[in-house]
Image: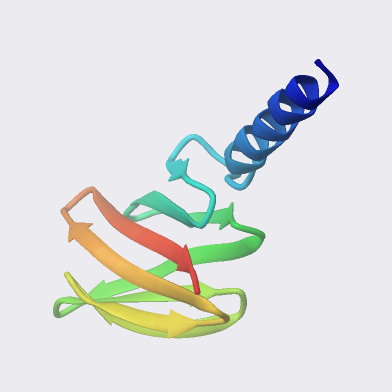
Length: 104
């Protein structure tokens, strides 16, 4: 019985850890990655996996993102690395930018 309670407690802790890795409604997370939907035209930022990620600009098919103080330029449908994370741009529309942040 004690082993079963410990297993359930561990599973709940892991599940809650994944949920608390994200800071806002525009974010969906698993244990090692988060998908962030940034609204364009506003000061868009989120804290995910313990790091602040901010949309800076979109220009000629490249998205500039600040990841924990490091600015990276990521091509649409491409990826780049910064601060121990892989940043991948999944889509860009007139209204939003979808970025996936994965811990390396």
